[in-house]
Length: 461
Image (tube, rainbow, N blue to C red):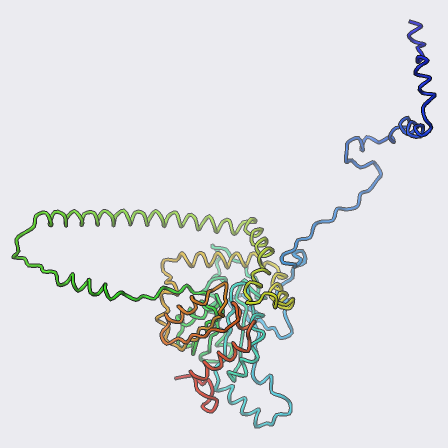
């Protein structure tokens, strides 16, 4: 027992320790010293010693298409010096107005000014209706020249959910008289702006989805619309309804089939005919049942989709889509994407700085879905033949969003419509080829309403 307590290392071990090289001794000293004593709070990995303050963790800032989403503003705070707001049903609609008188130079004679004023009184105002995801900005290059061409005021406004128009709160059970994000509201706002300009009628120029608003405004009040200019119309054009001449011949042959009641009765033919009638009756019943089941499932699907879009996941989805494809969509709309400047990108992304933009965009999308499922609403594509005012359809030859062939079909479906194609142009002729666009519109208006010596663009009675 005494020997165990007084145990000493064997001589060999002592010899090895004495012979250890000098470079290992600092390492041995560090090993003997061991790690620094830690308090109980630093007992686990990643813990912070007592008395040590960690710097506050910086919250990751959200960004959509390069726009900081943590510092959003009210739309009116983003307005330009020439911006105006007009309230309709509690919605403050952002708009801009250009007049041909604004360009008259100071050295012009009073007679010239009086003549310009006379043309303004006799001329027709022009209302510009932007497309989906756009705003008044998309008309900025042609508003003032159009005012000179028309000899009257030109007004462009942001439809609800776009641009700098106020973001109104809306849900399906709201007590408000009209959904501000519906097509009906946009049509009402269009007609209200004609009144705002003090005019009886106006020329409506729509671009892409704005063409739907222009056409619906005509159907709502045809006496208020002097002419329509549809630019890259996002209207599904039906195929040309041409019946084959052979069909008429076949029908004539069927009518010429003898039906002599005095001929010998064919029992087999009668039985077969009765069987076919029964099959048709059963098929009709089955078809009605299938349509009813389809309508039920479609209604449930729409309700589920609306609920999803109004959830927090819907807002996340629309932010992600705009972040990934917003700027890409603008570039894709041009024939030559390399010519899309930073000024253009900033013009399209500026509305993303307004508070509530994603909710408004979702409500607009929901309204489109509900309108498309309405049993009482007749699609615009089926009513194109009812348009009776002068119409011009303009498209770019390389439009990758609304193909030129679809615009041509729209023109063919409207009685007497004129069709113009701008070469080397994409989905935005008024931005990418403003000179050619203005030339086409000016030629159309002069053809329809007369030459400058015949009181340019005077309303037809």
